[in-house]
Amino acid sequence: MIKYDLHTHSTASDGTLTPTELVQRAKEQLVDVLALTDHDTVAGIEEAITAANIHRITLIPGVEISSQWENTGIHVIGLNIDIRSNKLLTQLQQLQTLRATRAQEIGRRLAKAGIPNAYQGALQYTREENLTRTHFARFLVAQGKADSISRVFKHYLVPGKPGYVKTEWPALREVVQWIKDAGGMAIIAHPARYKLTASKMRRLLQDFKNYGGTGIEVAHGNCNPDETAKNMKFAEAFELRASIGSDFHDPDTPWNELGRLPRLPKHLPTVWDNGL
Ligand code: AMP
Ligand code: MN
Ligand code: MN
Ligand code: MN
Image 1 (cartoon, rainbow, N blue to C red):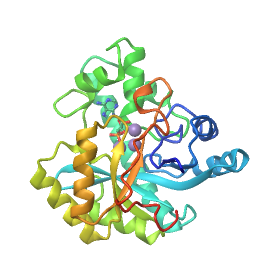
Image 2 (tube, rainbow, N blue to C red):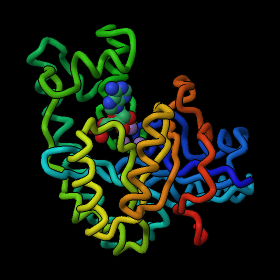
Image 3 (tube, protein in one colour):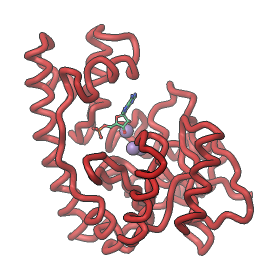
């Protein structure tokens, strides 16, 4: 039985393990096929491939791209992308610019809310200067603003809170095309997290399918059996292939440990059916 984990993060975005450490941990957790899917960057992939060769596990070059569909932020996993595609690298660079601008604005807003130097503070938590809200959250926890990352999000970093900045991510349609142009397959990440009504979710998946999307994460970190069952139904209804990924970020959040994912029923087509 091959063990897959097709959604993980490293220090190239908001994970706490370096790509090398991530691969080591995946090996310890008996993962056979691991995708590194950092937010809007492929900067960690080469290091991960080197480590994967040493540990004899299969490393799938991936990315998790931030996109927008009807005012909802949607994350799209790209698997088996060509990380040397200049076009893709340029597109991801645009997202890095968006992130940098947003981060400065988050810093300004937090300063107005009485928390100075958050931009510089968040930067201390990055290796590649790929700033995400998670880095701000780590800084705010260190500042004693809340006792956990999830509480800091709730009080500072989500819509309606002082450190939230709306970002115009590229349209879902475009992002799916970027992934396809780079030779990869596009997968809707963690569908349960968007809190969409069933009818809106169906529209999202129909659009995604029409744009050329391939798969949907039916099981992901922090997703309960009910959500997984629903996602499997969506997969079948829209003929999207099933994917699974822990969305691992940090060994200190054991609820989404690497490789800890349910088995899928045999009849369900998966993103790895035709070989990954
Ligand atoms: P960003 O892409 O910069 O907006 O940051 C999104 C990242 O923040 C996600 O990938 C998660 O890692 C993290 N995140 C979002 N919401 C929460 C939350 N409520 N609790 C903990 N982490 C969160
Ligand atoms: Mn993240
Ligand atoms: Mn995500
Ligand atoms: Mn993720």
